[in-house]
Length: 256
Length: 164
Image (cartoon, rainbow over all chains, first blue to last red; front, side, top):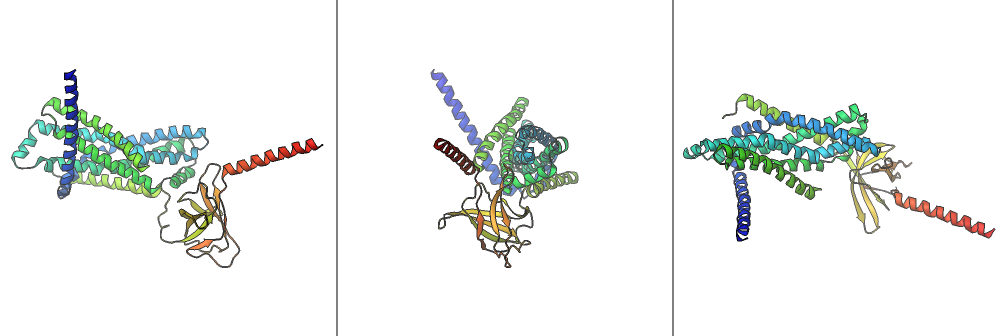
């Protein structure tokens, strides 16, 4: 019994310590941001890695999510005889929820894992220690550009996702199901406000910070073994997904 | 690892595409038409009942959108709702005895302000008040009126039968 209590106690303390380390690490990254922006070429490379290379998967997923929304939305709205509102339903759903969230989940899977395993492998092959010996701060030289690259890429990816998704919904709704294109676009324009788009952008920025911070933290602090790198990669995806969905609920509740 | 030209081009394309997507979202799927912002003038109208009228709802004449609802407030002096309209400057020849009514687009559609032109020779200027207004029709009160009048008719019919 005593042992069980002790176990619970030490687990709880571990959890607090982990959250604290995350917070301190993220705080450090944010503090370093202005200095890191003075070396744009490093950041550009990482925007390319996190953003441009994720473009195909984001566009493809956006198209199919939009097409599914078109099908499901049409089926549902047709029951109420209001299939003309399909554009509104698809646009609001994509811009406010699906765009930021699905992009963040895909980003965690595509770019987050790449970041975590890259940093983990650097740790395992002592590249990070070598930098420290050469008096190069690995956080400034290696971690910061990756962190910033992720933050810059995420809102842009989410916007591309939403745009492609709307065209996907239009493809199914208008071309296949015969919704009037004028109604589709004009009802969408009437219902969507700048605030809705702002909400999506704010969400994707927050998700960008969260996903990038988690990926670089896990990679940077992974155990220097093959197993450690694997575990860091897995943890990146799991923690990112849970945190994104949690944050999404909180942000939606605040901004609705 | 330095940024090579190929990477820079790829990143540039990605960033441009991202901003193009944002621009598309902001301009193409929202209602605030660009260029509708500055060239407008304001009109005020008070209504007994605005129903479900919302800020941003269209103001139309004969079905043509000429402006939007800018704000909806409540006036405690008159105990009425005050609706401020923003009208496009192109439509600056609305007679100053025109009337404003709140209509519903379709059975379940959103509500809008319809302006019916009057016969006056002078036109509305910025900040003018629309004198003649007609409130929104609230469906519930309409139905209850109808039901009560039906019930009243039946009661009357029974009373007259009883008299015979």
